Length: 176
Image (cartoon, rainbow, N blue to C red; front, side, top):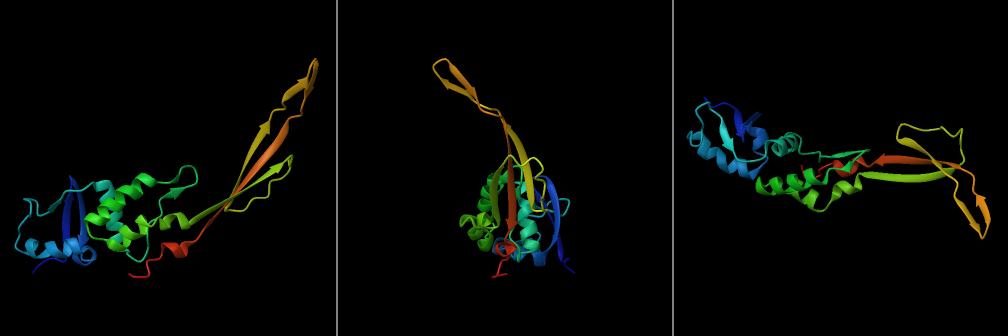
């Protein structure tokens, strides 16, 4: 009796998953017939896949939950454009058209919206929600003048409020 689970050897890293998950990719669907005949099976029973295992992990996550597109973003660094680029190429290779198209159309840029407001001289201004964060800066007064007259501007406290919102609907794959 054939097992419903397979072990993939992706450039040395093992991934175990079900045939049902892999069948979301036409690429793997086409390989199943060869694999049933034990063609391409390695000594340990796994099947070799020539791909970047770090990127393949994300493809496999998508195949497991194709109703949600991935968001690779954090507040400090923004979007992980390199990962999106690699994932787009692999999604194309493994025939995951929904994922490939979503990345090509840069739909992930529609998920995160940032709004910044600059407040000047608000020393006690500390109201902040869970989706906002504050950055405080002291702008040193400039020295300027005309001729022998020197004028120094006062130091100013500047607070930048950054509010972040997410549109999670953009992450939903309506074709899944």
